[in-house]
Length: 197
Image 1 (cartoon, rainbow, N blue to C red):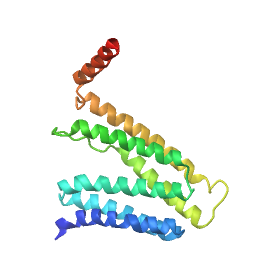
Image 2: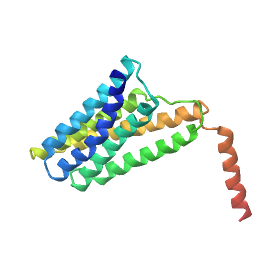
Image 3: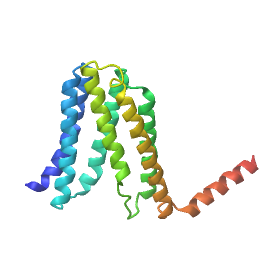
Image 4: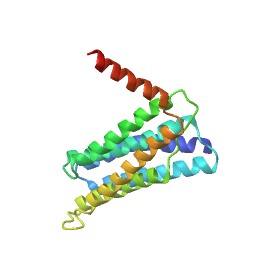
């Protein structure tokens, strides 16, 4: 029975997304905060149980990070639409995810995995904290320094995200997951095509 718990918690996070968005769009930021926090707790429990009892599955390896990213991007998009945070925060996050998807395409069909590092996890935690602060400050109409404190957290989270992305690309290249010879060939082909024109 326990073996189904991690995947059930992952599925629960998908179910919580529309609930969180509903409360944000209806202006009930306190309930949005509560359900968003619940989503974060299920994420922690999911990983802890899976590792402690060796219940890691292919479903979990695929869907767990997807649930994280979908929750984060959906909530950030909702906060942008509600004019709580600036759109450039969402754009940078989405560009980072796009690069990660491209990186994953290099690994497709290869028996290799690039594991999440502490700086990647730090960025995720910082985004969660920033979103929580946004919801709380909006709910209680906090102004002044503390009213803008969430933006400071978003900037720190974005710095951690960009650093994490740079380390991810570096890891792919140094370990040979990106074929350096293929990159050279592609570069030569581009030069040849330009000369032909």
